Image 1 (spheres, rainbow, N blue to C red):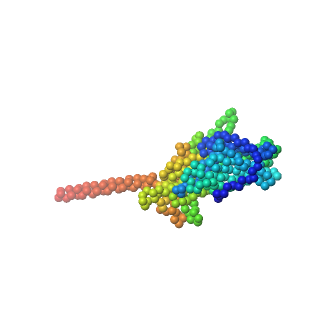
Image 2 (image 1 turned 30 degrees about the vertical axis):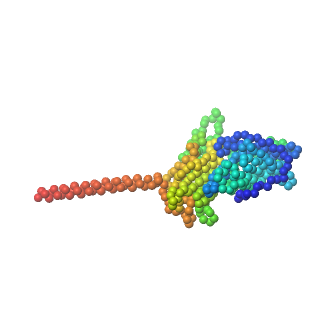
Image 3 (image 1 turned 90 degrees about the horizontal axis):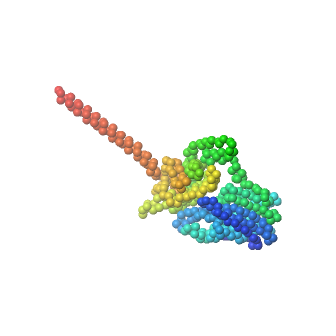
Length: 430
């Protein structure tokens, strides 16, 4: 739960820190590598860290809509408050950046290991990136660091991109090099590699496409066979406001990602977590599967006349943390959608496959879709309005059937008229 109180600053101790800023990767994950060397009064290093991070924050606007803002440490990073610690305060690594944003982590140790303890992140919604934010000022979140214990006198390294979610904030970390409780002021030459980096050595399978291990030049190249991607499982998702369901969604989801080569990824509803928010004019459905793929659907309400309101899908944001075929993590969005449009108080349904264009390189395919993000009554869907393609499919056979029925009627009429004339002609012969 976010709090408005700032993270308590430890007793200020003289220290010297060195920061190195370097350009990072592309897109949302383009950030700056931050290198911090915390030293004690004797000018001996006690904490050494180099890492990259970005923050994705969901916030409410004055119009009761929800938007996403992205924060990344830039060249104006400072390090006030970083300290080696003392008998009453734990060692602390702290940085400040941008328009009033800050991040910190303190450390604990045993006789054999050390680890991060508490992470604190403060973001200031007075920053221009939080356009039309309803709540103004600094907001602080506090979360337990999930890092496993590391042997003392060992440098922890992890290139794998990882994330922490708390309240409305997603924290992303990668390319981490860290040693706390540095002994004798010298950073160790012994490394401790995270499990995620170790697992990337083995062949990986993504969406039924297998990447073979590297072979020597003298070995024959393996033939890679790809299995056709099956239709995704249909998932039932819902959000609650108190004890009542406020949003219902049923759909099969498939991502079409073009990085190096096109890859189809099915989202498994059995391993997907559902979060989000409901409102009177705006609602967000966030799906997070076990492979760290985040899909945010933002719905809005519009007035079409004095007494008529409709809802529609306004925005989609996708974050793919797990790499695909060795590519960089991906973040993309489209905030200019106007689809899945139907009357407020109804549900929208489309049994045919549909494609939601996020970017040229990223699309979502939906199957057997039914959605109702507003005015859910008795925890069940209201009457559905079919999508236009489905309606067209019903109209075509009806039209053809009507035409055939008319043709049959004309044939019968012509037959009876001809038969009657023939009989009349026979009577005239007598």
